[in-house]
Image (cartoon, rainbow, N blue to C red; front, side, top):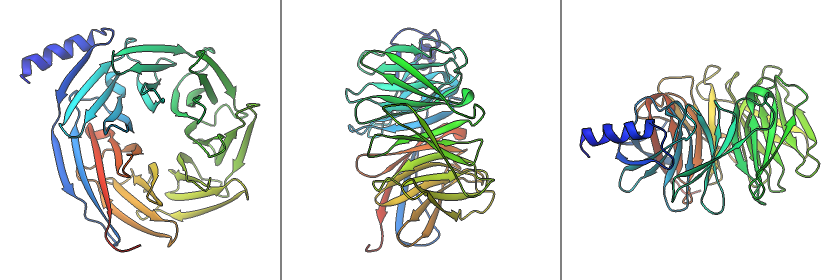
Amino acid sequence: MAVSRRAALGRLLRAGMVGAAADLFGGTLRAQGRATGSGWTANFTEWTVPTPGTRPHDPLAMADGSIWYTGQMASEVGRLDPDSGRFTEFRTVIPDSGPHGLAADRAGNIWFTANFKAYIGRLEPRTGRITAYRLPDPEARDPHTPVFDASGILWFTVQGAGMIGRLDPATGAVRLIKLPDRDSLPYGIAVNTFGVPFFAEFNANRLGSVDPQTLAVREYRLPAAGARPRRIVITPDDAVWYTDYARGYLGRFDPRSGQAREWPSPAGAGAQPYGIAAAAGMIWYSESGIDPNTLVRFDPRTETFQTWPIPSGGGVVRNMAVTPDGSLVLALSGVDRIALVRLKRADPP
């Protein structure tokens, strides 16, 4: 695509046209990950997003192989076709919305939290149409991370207001649940096999959950007073795994027993573990406090770690997702890149 055409498309997108989208190509970096330890190999492919300064925040892997991401600082939602390297960018209708987290419904619509403008957005990929669902409380600032439960209800954290949100796509109704500590900064959120949303309180040493029927909140205090859980993932056994950003630990919490276990991250106290995912029976997360950022694998069975440096440096991996075939997708915020990491077990299990 000629530079002049790209510039023209950029001007159209910045004008905030409803359904405006551009097909663009980004640069590609491929690298074989070199890991400490043994057991798995990781092949990184990275693409530079077309709009500089986008600061991609959260990724989303779809069944058709596409990768979606939020371009927070460019107020857009992007789609990458890894096979062709083609990007499609969808500009938000409301300027400076600051798209943050992503989730997809069963129909393939893409939902995002508008971090800067306090609404939940639904993008219809076929038409580019975006629908905004405003939060009903003016204090509900900073909608953060969304997740769908099995019944199709969207749950989300409202970090700056100390709330958890519930949106019913069938009616558009939004409910907001105030947490006991309004300064707790609810951050990552995930739903267990019973349909119960769990969340991390980033400004406290607590995890929390919401009863999906009564909307009652329950909180669970972690053993270390200095723990600051940021992102979480729930494994099939309903254990809640969390990255302790402040102390440099990976943690596992069992809601049934109330017991928590922790392991120091390989890079130490300054590792700042952040984005996390579970795939192939392993826990994967990134250490954002070191340069380059790393991708870390933790084996719960052997309690061992394996580490890869991210080829481009990463620039803070705020979140990651798992593809249908068990690969990882990373949003490399500080370097304006999206990464696909293909994982392979090198040794027999």
